[in-house]
Length: 135
Ligand SMILES: [Fe+2]
Ligand SMILES: [Fe+2]
Image (cartoon, rainbow, N blue to C red; front, side, top):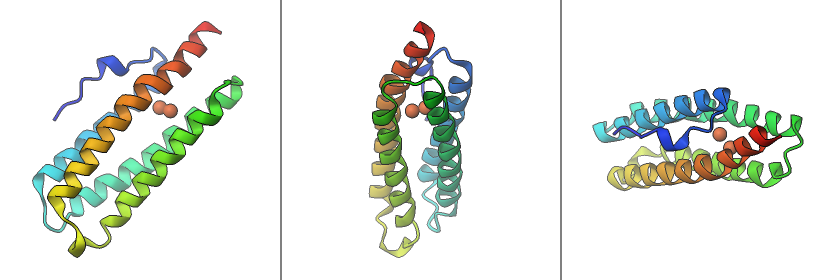
């Protein structure tokens, strides 16, 4: 599954590069899910990569917001925190492989990731980019 990146381009080079990497990671997770590897090592590895890169990206975005006194940084950061929490919870589920309904898990993860990225990057990060471009 390939994500059309065009609607998510903010015009801020560094952010777009990082978002592209995040989209690559989401595609890798979804691919790993499709393989339905019974041990799910693939999904676990891809999830860990996504968690690490997400932490890196959010930290940089949050630093950027602070440095420009972005007026909506608090709510933006709250969205990041919710995402981090949910991603951690979904990762924890993989530690109990015997209890997972893999088809259900794959569907939930894929749906949520696509929905979140669609909303957050398209709305919140875009709003931040507009602020940067206008100020
Ligand atoms: Fe963000
Ligand atoms: Fe972002």
